[in-house]
Length: 334
Image (tube, rainbow, N blue to C red; front, side, top):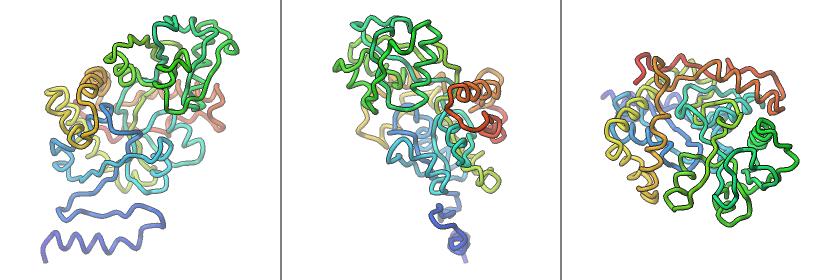
């Protein structure tokens, strides 16, 4: 009996043990571990390290076969993860904290993007140069509670009475709402993507990242696992993060070549926009000096969790230390 055949038989024998609705744990015929990864949103330059690691063979070399999936909606990844239907998910630090507060056993394994991308974005005609200029304006958000809390924190920090600013839920049509004049500014779009896109279109956007306007810093994109799977699949997750670090290294060495993985897998993307967005984002994939790739700062998580609690975004305690772990990060970093 060949080794691939034996591995397949072992995998098939394990299938009945899988719980109802849970992802089946199987090996590919080559003996690599299959990992289903659900993105937070449609593929874009924020995910370039994942596609670079895929295209460069870093995942395969680490013994994992990664299937990249898009979510049916932005709220789906952590729910799918908690239900055991995917192995890993890309999400956001505030979403991890809120999911745990709602009883979902999810844990952040590492930071993909080290700082906030969410920003206040406006066009010159609105006359918004600083947060204080938001007084009397209409601000579009995606209707997410922590975006409303961001706005309130920013206004209070700027000395603006929140009741003087109108918040309008425009869903995920933030840029269209801005361009059509339905709102004076948006809060929820990313400075490295929508902001870059507007610059490329000659709209001269004015951009204020939320962490430069009073909101505590946080990791915008994080790699998340089901907490119950950590002990069982910790080695696989460690291998995934290590391979991802090599994807970042490839992007730093030759951005054009490494970006080909994203563009080939998603041919509908605008190559010029993705390259410009990657230029803006690339420094954020790297950890602080002296820290390993995907490092998550405990003090930062504590401060952001306390802010969420103060803004009534959490019903339970602000328990940030159980919401993330740095134990699976590559010791040598990049």
